[in-house]
Image (cartoon, rainbow, N blue to C red; front, top):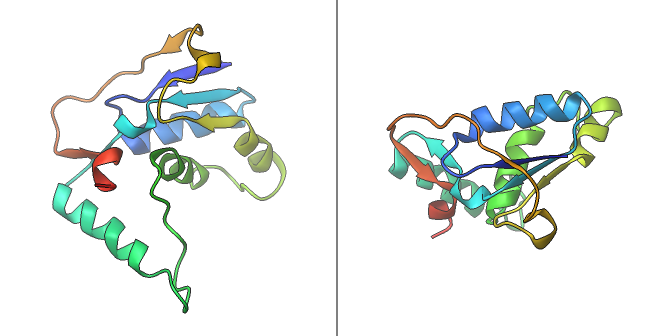
Length: 130
C-alpha cells in the first residue's frame, strides 16, 4: 500500500499519478487532501465552485459538487480513470482512499512525498469551502 502526502501538490498532477498507480494494481491512500492546491486565479476558481454548487435544486441541473476536500480530490481522480463504472476502472476506483488528515491506521506507514511545484498562483482546496 502506498501512502501519498498531498500537502502542496498540484491537484491535476497528483490525480493523474494516483489514477495511473491504481490502474496498475496498487492500493493508494492520499492524506492531507485539504492542502492540495489548484493552480490558477483564486477569484475565478472560487467563483466556479460556488456557481456549480448553486445549480443543485429542484431542477437538478448538472452534477452535485461536494464541499469536503477529499471528495473534491477523489472526483478529480475519477475523471482520469479509464471507466470508473466497469472493469479495470471500477477495480482501480475501489483501491483509492482519500483523507483530509492522517488517520490512526496510517500514522506508522511510510509516507511518499512527490515533487512539489515552485511558486505559482494557486488556491488550496480547503480555501474553496470558506
